[in-house]
Image 1 (cartoon, rainbow, N blue to C red):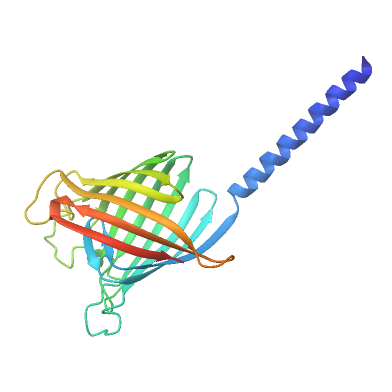
Image 2: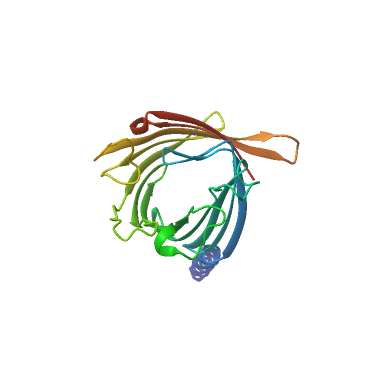
Length: 243
């Protein structure tokens, strides 16, 4: 009887120790600092159903610690980048975010005033956006509202709190990672054009990504995205390479 009791106690101690080590490892992984550099090369830059520039390089740098993240993202097109006398639609964005489970919240600072413009004119040339998101496994929802839209120096400019709501579903087909999405703007704002007002269907999209194996040790991640912009009566096909 005593021997069985010792065996049972020993098993419980081993299980408890394993759980403690596992929990400690999990907590350490969740609080580990990470820094991730990356870049995309795209055939054209399309943002929320609106054409921005032609072929562009889009570098990014992401810093994360647990659920907190600070990311830097930029875009410069190849066509006008070589001539600074032209307005170059250079973009530089900073996003501070926090996520837990499927929930996420972030605040983004968008700046796309162009090469040669002054970065420090926040009231005139910066756009600040708040985002709430939730992921249900493969299905995700996002609510994005502009809290401040650069007024360009116009004191009479009225903020519209432009909003973009998204829904996306991720799935896989024969090794190809796909994502189908829809985007709507619920009231008149910066996503409207041609006199459209109120609720509009901004985007319908389908993105497919795959790694093309070039050798035994190297594969090139590529993607293609079809974007329809019904409210603008426009369509885009974008090809990209992720590095």
